[in-house]
Amino acid sequence: MTNPVAIVTGGSRGIGAACCRMLAARGYDVAFSYTANDAAAATVSAEIEAAGVQALAIKADMATEDGVLALFTAADGRFGRLDQVVINAGITGRIKRVVDMSVEDIQAVMNLNIVGAMLCARESVKRMSSKSGGKGGNIVIVSSAAAWLGSPNEFVHYAASKGATNSLTIGLAKEVAQEGIRVNAVAPGLIDTDIHATAGAPDRVERLQSMVPMGRGGTAEEVAEAILWLLSNDSRYTTGVILPVSGGR
Ligand code: NAP
Image (cartoon, rainbow, N blue to C red):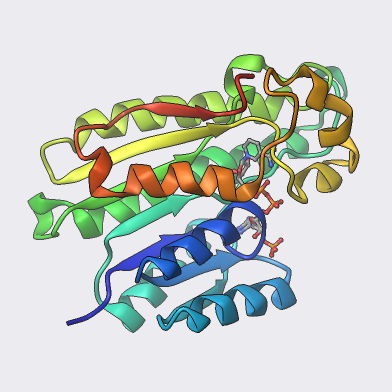
């Protein structure tokens, strides 16, 4: 008996790391990608292994096809099966108004958040689809409440990329619904991770939390719990949904 296997993109920190820890606690071997923070990746690997399952950390850029293929191929080689995929790696870009954005600013966000996400979805379907001999599985894409808030004066390019992610979720879910694959998304609101400091606003959660109906930012674990539900058999009749995890925002 081999353990079930999960892939998490962007698993070294934040929401992805919380997913890795929770999947490990539920008996999954976990392969995850990251790009820069070797120390954070080593910590998550150790946490996964402490749960008695295998960890595979792959330093690979999910904004490129080569990076996506490196992750999925490495997971094939180590585990030989694939059950769950969390397409999580994402960036906001630096806070700017649209009028000040360069083509490079826009492309960096789109390349990771939508082109890379779509390539990860493609590689997942290739392996899981009953049409190609796969055993089925689940895909959860990490979108954002920004898709409907629009993020004016902060990162409209990011909001637009997450709108595209929602369309990917809806369309792909319908495309593979009879191939044993469910495709869903979560749309987190204001979650306390490093992403805000990377965008140039380390105090963003504290500053904006009074605008959240529940009056506080969320945690990476609170988002991961929703993702794990969508990956579980408990949500077996749910596909193509975008589940807000946003404290009512
Ligand atoms: P985070 O704390 O900044 O962590 C990002 C993770 O992704 C890190 O593990 C990072 O690796 C990895 N990563 C970044 N670029 C990558 C790339 N090109 N290829 C592979 N891995 C990459 O972010 P987070 O807040 O957890 O966000 C995770 C997802 O949730 C994103 O899609 C984001 O848009 C979405 N989200 C977040 C919030 C929020 O408020 N935090 C709200 C809505 C949606 P390194 O450690 O190597 O840098």
